[in-house]
Length: 219
Ligand SMILES: [Zn+2]
Image (cartoon, rainbow, N blue to C red; front, top):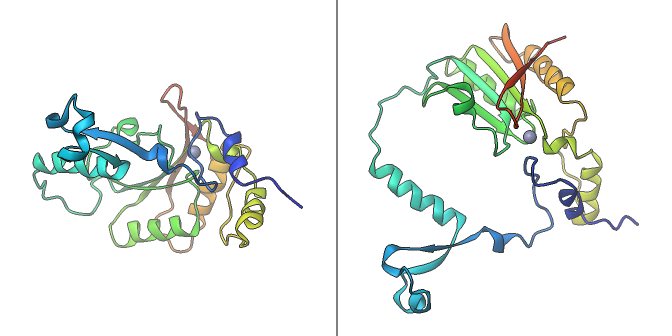
């Protein structure tokens, strides 16, 4: 029988590529940060009694950041319709800062992200709502160099089934040729019967080393 644990697949991918869901577990400890307040500085040993120094999860850290954000926040009074009338579909890769890379400001666009920036049925769902309810007309697709999906195959689904006893209903959407995958994604958008606007659909590969976009010819 197949004995390779699914976690092995994630280990084959080096740290420079986008994250792949961890199936092997045991990662929780690495997501805990030691957080301290100014009141507890230099006095870790008394932390438990004072309660000032706590083991916080990464989510606690985000919530903490949000309180600082909200304290300085003023309602910009924006409409939900993207100012630039564009929807960007991109990989979830942590190195891809869409707003900075594309010169976008708050309120400018819809961003739809998943592993690979793949045009799935659910991405079509979001694009359909984006166009029909919120007035976007242009679609920009962004894949990138060093994507984790280049390291996987559909065999990943089989590995999952062997481990958990259930075959996922979704495709892994792995690919070997990023240019070709961008072309295929453009084609899926252009041929969707649900979208109102398919004239301005362009696809790119973002180079995580240089920060540059390379446009892919629709072919
Ligand atoms: Zn990626």
